[in-house]
Image (cartoon, rainbow over all chains, first blue to last red; front, side, top):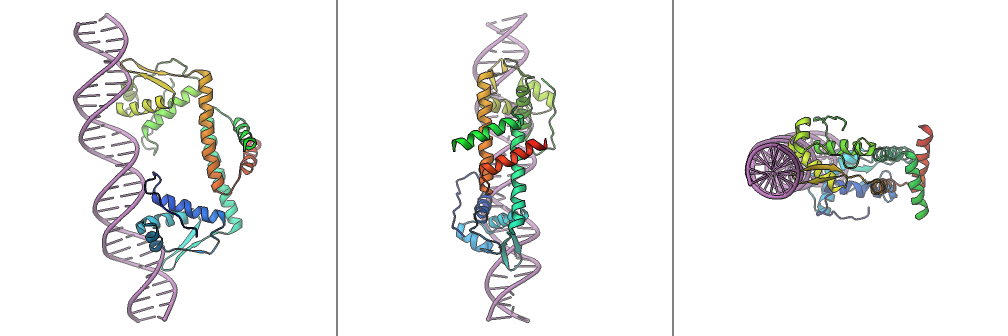
Length: 124
Length: 124
DNA sequence: TCGATTGTATTATAAATATAATACAATCTG
DNA sequence: CAGATTGTATTATATTTATAATACAATCGA
């Protein structure tokens, strides 16, 4: 797993930074299905965090279906490509719906959003 | 202004509910440029909130450019159609960028988002 | 001008959240 | 089996956030 650091000055809570970093590792493929994650205590020591903070990150990652915790033994990446694709898609759809809600409350419709998106695609 | 209520059981803070309701009034056109808003104390009494809670909502609405507060006199909707359109567009772009960031961190690209969006347009 | 109305500032309280300290319990390994 | 390692649960502390109580200051209007 790629090393990462916690920005203690950030407004983003430490446990969320841990979650984000690990998700990124999984999404990018650097962490594969079945890979074992560092133990809570080891990662806590490495990042200079309290073990409970890492435990909270792992707990949430498990709830979101990214990893699996087994008592006494450790934490593993849970990454079944097919399932993960539907998971990612579900997450994307949730985020899109949230965004569209905001757009509508701003007075725009889905067509407006589509036009703006296409401008984005041309620009970059 | 259309009457609205505060859901005290909601996880959304009261001051944010006030902001959202007033933005909606402005965006929908029910509140027009130059319209005077109820005084902080009046709205607080109406909604059964502390005046400071309403003041916080008004303060943020002013910071976001939706209204204007004048000491001793009151609060007015600031809604210059042209400027407001650019404001809305800026807000939309900000929200879109935030969403696209999440999409990318999920492993999707802008093209994927466009396809999903078009499916949304067909379905509804 | 002067009282009433308005927004603002200060301070306090309550609730939620993040982090930490510590103890507990399941699993693995020799 | 026994000790070490692992995740989990409980409780406490610190910080942030939302709300409230109160006092202050600018503006308006009779």
